[in-house]
Every structure is written in C-alpha cells, then in structure tokens.
Image 1 (cartoon, rainbow, N blue to C red):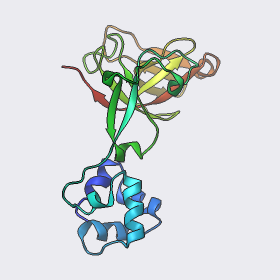
Image 2 (cartoon, rainbow, N blue to C red; image 1 turned 60 degrees about the horizontal axis):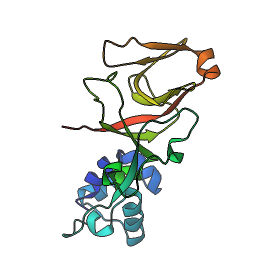
Image 3 (cartoon, rainbow, N blue to C red; image 1 turned 180 degrees about the vertical axis):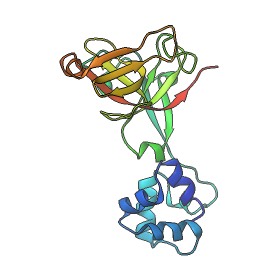
Length: 202
C-alpha cells in the first residue's frame, strides 16, 4: 500500500480522519501505510473510492493514474445567484474549465472563479483562477469568496472580530471593509467558500 499515505495527504486528511470515515482504528491506517498489514478487498475498494483513485493506483500498480475532475471557471458572479447556477462559461472552450485531482474533489464541493481587478495583488492578479471549496464559514486569515448585498462575488482575506467581519484586500491601496454583526445579516454578507488553490497566469 505504498500509495496510501500519498493519496491520504493529497486528500487533505490525517490518519484519524481517514480512520473515522473508514470506520476503522487510526492504528489500522498506520499499519496499512507502513506495510505492516493490508486491508481486505472490500476495504481496498472503499479506500480507493474515498480517495478518488483506482484500486490499481492505490496498490502502486504501473500504468494507472488518478482520475481528474473537470470543473467550470466562472467569471463575475452576482450576489444572490448560486455560483453553480451560473452558465456564463462555454462547455466547448477548454479555457473555461480547470481540472482538480479526484482526491481533492472527493473532499467537498468545489468551484473555480476568475479573479477580476487588482485588490488582491500581488498574490492574485486579474485573470488568475482560484479553486474554491464550498463552505459557508471560514477562519480568520483565510482567503474567501464573499458577496456583500447586491455586489458581485469578490475575493478577500477574512478577519473576524467580536463586533463583526473585516474583508481585507492584499493590495494596500484598498482600505479594509468592516461589517458589523447587524450588517452581516441585513445586507447580507455571505461567504461562498474558501480559496484552496491558485492557478496563476504567467
């Protein structure tokens, strides 16, 4: 099982998390990864499915690779419109899609958005694509996709405070935007998801 540790880490799980999802002990995962023991066929199939690879790849057989998952790249997204419902991409245009590995895709719902403007420079430039994991909340310091009222979806660094939320641009030319707890509800301020990967243009 030489590929198990690699696949688990690529899926963003530690041994305890994988064990919980498999219904086995953490020590069993550790033994499988070290080669001290090997799961039965049913567990092999479950592991492969959970990690988004084939059984052959998990067993490190030659000639097999993980299956990628294509997701559309969205442009500007208006507030109140679910990103997954937007159809401003061309199914026939390869530039309107990116591929993420299957192990990542198995870890949640993902979307890709194209950056607009210069507020997140120098880390994110206009035209870059970010991979976003769908989640309605995030931690301070995370880069998130968020909508405020009727504005389009935007990419910002999140900072939580006792009184509300601050959305911070990485470009110092743009002032931080603060929203009180009441404004977060009344506007509203909605977090669509957390940015997990950048596909930069060169």
